[in-house]
Length: 206
Image (cartoon, rainbow, N blue to C red; front, side, top):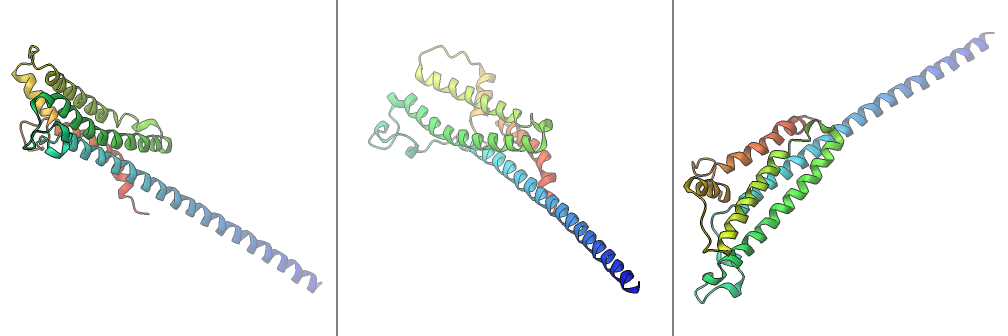
């Protein structure tokens, strides 16, 4: 009888030990899954924010007010390395076409990462990217207007002084401190929307 009692006690101890081990393993798995998800969200937030910053820098690249000689095709330059007058439109169009590719590449990356974020976190922040898209469209229109005048220099210049100032403000990056550059703060405000959304994820410790 004593041996039977001992055997029953052993079985109970083994069962309890197995149950305890299973509970510990489950808790450990749950903790690991939470940590893994946290790290995944942290990395995704960093990727999206980094892509947004790349777009900001690409805007600066396109809007650089200086056009360097090496940006023009060599066959459009004269003997002293200046753009020939007859190539003013074609040469300038070439420069901005090349510059714009960098902005397109940066935007493509941001759109991809933003889509991944929407899959991860839902549609709550789906409109965050909209102001940045509007900035890109506004810059594109300003460039098209500039190149149209270069292509047809004899057409009537319909822009008044205020419109010209607004166009230059859009076309050329002069910095946040310049009163002549009202477009850079607009871009920065669009980037800040990403920062407000993603900084909590990036700042969270794992």
